[in-house]
Image 1 (cartoon, one colour):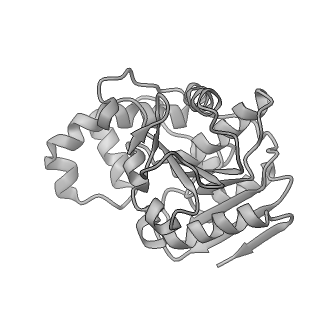
Image 2 (cartoon, one colour):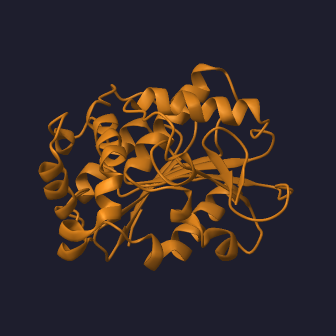
Image 3 (cartoon, helix red, strand yellow):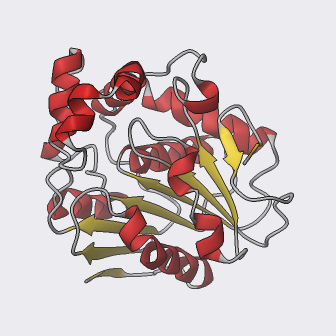
Length: 257
């Protein structure tokens, strides 16, 4: 893994000579390592970049960012300053990462930079959907309760893990960034591909379907038999969808399982 900007990392060896690029954004509390398997799954078909925000991993000592538009500006700075928009690319995010993908697409449009061929959003309620309201500031115990609601972390990890406790400031900043991001729907120049777990307690299907409001050039929603954290199980399926979108971007609205 090699750093290519303040927060972006290239996940495979080499100089990114592939003909297309995937820029990936992880869930709250996550880092670039959430996509560690993607270069192998893509079989060198795309240059994979992923975001690590401050407060975790190699950026453990960097100042936290609790504002989604500020995160998007930082990502856009990395992409623009690193000449990383020089080929067809996708923006893809899971959970919080979906908000970062949308905000980054909006920021790149504001700067008049080339749009993504496709924007991919996974397990992310649209911020204008009714499911997005949450307290802006939470104690450690409230944060842990919120993590429990994702139904993905064993109780022993939540209550007795020093590493998780050390990560709580970063998780809090991520949640505050998400909770404070309430934009009006702004149409994207790119088609939007979405994925939703039919058993997801955090991002019900109807809240993911709401992304269609900004997808004026094409929208697809694929339903997965899954809860919230399904990238490991369904990563190959999502990658196939993204690659298909790079070749033939959707031009209509479609929903399938």
